[in-house]
Length: 244
Image (cartoon, rainbow, N blue to C red; front, side, top):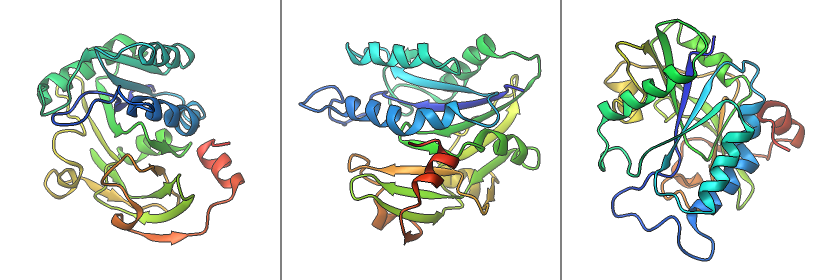
């Protein structure tokens, strides 16, 4: 069933942040390049293809970045770009507006009549393991809120890897219904576990990779939980994260 939505805030503007479109090598260009090089293939090669990836993009995205985003959407039938906003949550968008928009677009693309829906949060510099969609659907059968706690951090500038267990990390999935929809943005990801009662799930497998690349100010290897490991083999990254 295609009732899993992966929500990705791609390039909405946030208060007091510098322009993402200006400079010799602007933020948006770097993020698009990373997304295409590291992330799309892992979504394309999901063992369960029944999901929708919603990209929330700035209504005022200038050319040629807008055209590049439209090309990504055109080449990947699981991607829907939502151009309804220019700003992010807490900076002009309420949580209720955001939730209503997710459901509005889901009703346009779903291929079933189930009232049940799962919504997960991802960033454009995150890579899902190829069984991610399959596992989320299994995990949310036992708990309506799950936090996938096992994964890797990959510093693509130094090619270092951190093996991490982060039980209250950002990889939150929420199962609810269309007419009483809850999203993984109800609270910050820590509070989705500590206050909303989410169930941390720590698997043997790494179900995600977060890229560390110098432009994500908080996510640095020395700030994240875990321990440094040898670089995984190219075969491992290809087999489990569709990276070549």
